[in-house]
Amino acid sequence: MNLPGKVAIIGGGTWATAIAKLVLCNADAINWYIRNEDTIEQFVRTGRNPHYLSSVKFEISRISFSDDIGDIVKDSDTLILVTPSPYIKSQLKKLKSKNLQGKFIISAIKGIVPDENLIITDYLRKNFNVPADFLAVIGGPCHAEEVALERLSYLTIGCPDQQRAEIAAELLSTPYMRTTISADVEGIEYAAVLKNVYAIAAGICSGAKYGDNLQAVLVANSIQELQRFINVANPLSRNICEPAYLGDLLVTAYSRFSRNFLFGTMIGKGYSVKAAQAEMEMIAEGYYGTKCITEINEKLKVDMPILNAVYNILYKRKPMQQEMSLLTDLLR
Image 1 (cartoon, rainbow, N blue to C red):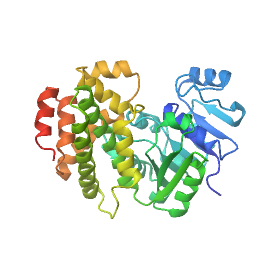
Image 2 (tube, rainbow, N blue to C red):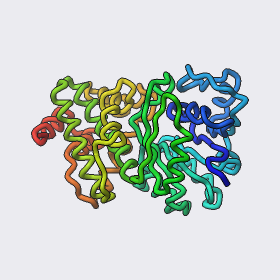
Image 3 (cartoon, rainbow, N blue to C red):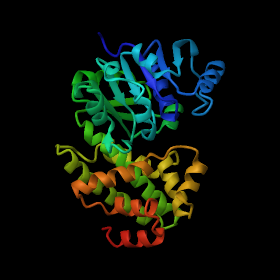
């Protein structure tokens, strides 16, 4: 089989819609799994995702939609997972290991499988016996909204198999999307989770009006903390200043499109977690990532004061001003 073959998008949100737009620049047609039948009906009728990036117009004749993930997987060779991490486990439970055998799976999920505390590629290897060489990840820095606007953007494709990494990179490359490849799959995945946590911290800083100077110091300390963690979690020679690490952190911690920054800003203004989540009506992956990484770090024991402060605010409901005061004494 010549990859990418028939490509499937698994998920119907903002990032899934942006990824579909990119893929359709290079593929004649795609399969697309969206779990809500009503959403599919509206999509087919209007040519636009009714809920996300509705400015993007699709040629419906080039898309085969289904609300049955089993049918989509069966009829596809390359699967791009773009379901929010809190829901990916329940979606994949509908499949058996044999359903994924021989499939090239690309994860665009910037989160960890809750309860399992596993990055997506580890979860697929351990629960579905997918070989590491058949797994790839997409790293930033990139916001879906800017893909919709066709602003020049960059992605890093991580895969231990260089040939498959190049295939994935070509699949996503367009005149406005530049791609590079890397073998650092775990590092890219963990960085994608942690940058969301640090974006929440930056948002808290902004919402509480601590000022730009402190926020800059916070982000500078965040990249150091991120580096300490991924160097322990996956010892490997890497340049932390590359776009998949520092670049992704910066755009998530500063961009107006960052939902994790927005979530943090609301917390900084005094919103409760539930109130912030309800008002956003979108998933802030960093909320779930904070708990997962904290639990993982109970074993790794990496020094992570920023992570600890965010966890204490979000999950232990400790006073935000108190936690930020303690944190700022530790920043250098």
